[in-house]
Image (cartoon, rainbow, N blue to C red; front, side, top):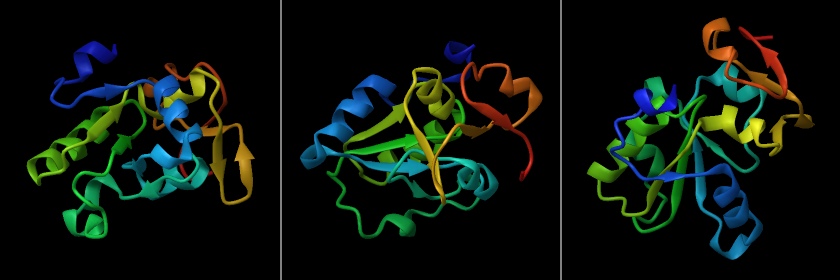
Length: 143
């Protein structure tokens, strides 16, 4: 499913590789969540910055050096690949797309958080996409 979804225009990082980078705090990348506000509110990767695919503007990252490592994610990786392309075109030199998005992150057993702390909930986007989420508690809409 994922292979047909991606243009392969941006290099990938696996969930395991991202977790290893997070664990080495000195080299932790900036993590950008490109999903919708209701998706981010349900859960997100700890420390991620919400940027919203639909309204994304490069000015949101004026404070980020262009050589800083940046990992971009969404539900499965499509929207994040589009934002990653914009970052690369703007001169960001170390941009990676999280392979499989938050679904693959959770399917591999990595934690997600909301405003109250760690949670099992994951916004599944739609019933059609939700079938790819094997772990966690699926949430649809703005529950």
